[in-house]
Length: 113
Image (cartoon, rainbow, N blue to C red; front, side, top):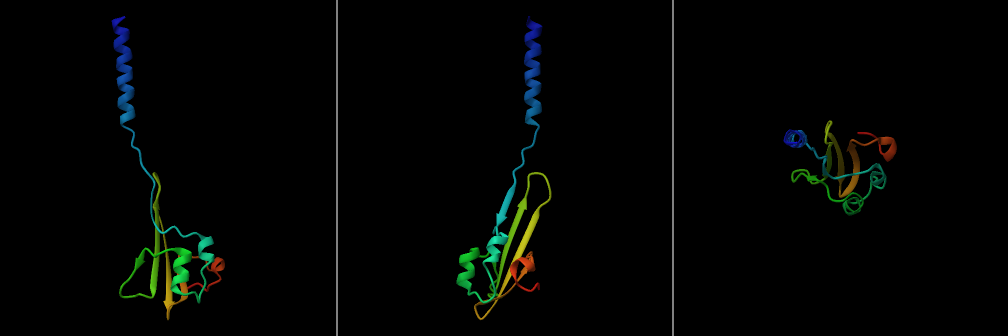
């Protein structure tokens, strides 16, 4: 009876140790999530306020290039490669002139840069 009790305790302890060795990883999402549907709302000629309303505030706004907004998004799944997307909007006279980066020109109606 005593050896059976020891065996049960040993098996439970072994199972606990094996469970403690597993590594839990979390998917990490950072930046501006811009969908193709949101990008379709933006077109050349829009002013900065209209663009900010449609897409939100840009992740990066260079103080030396105030007419260039950069929207960056990265996704690191628990297991796998990191996906990074970047969209740049270029303004001239406070009006949207062009969109470049990870954008499909046919979906945007904008010539690809």
